Image (cartoon, rainbow, N blue to C red; front, side, top):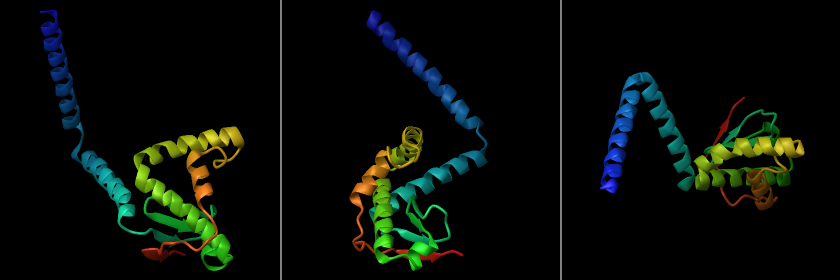
Amino acid sequence: MKKLLVIVLLIALSSLSFANIIEFFESIPPVVKFGVGAGIALYGLSWAYPWFFDPLIVVWDTDSGAFCFGPFIVIDTYLWYEAPESSRNIVLNHEYVHYIQHAVYGPILSLSYPILAAYSTIKTGNQRDANYWELQAIELSDCSKPDWEPSFVIELE
């Protein structure tokens, strides 16, 4: 009899909390719902893109040299046009590892990278030396010509 009472109480509490959740979501303005939904859909597309296509390269003057953001690898103009080929190759291979990490780990990478970068900065003074994602990218990249071709190159000035 006690088990039945516990089950009934759990169902009642679950129903009440579910009703509160529905009220909460109904109280959110449609514009906010649309914005959040569009953001989730865009993130999902950026996560799915690497499973089917090679990265999009954006050539742009950037102080950080290069970085990967979803399906985009942003690389500095100097590295793309003027740097020695071995330097360009190691940077492209390094960023390609981040591109693949994003494809495989998706939200885990997106949520943990800033935390690990902050930890690394506190521990070593920079965001790379104790950051698992950076250590993996450093270990797996070399100066050989990349085995992939960019899907598209966008040049921004």
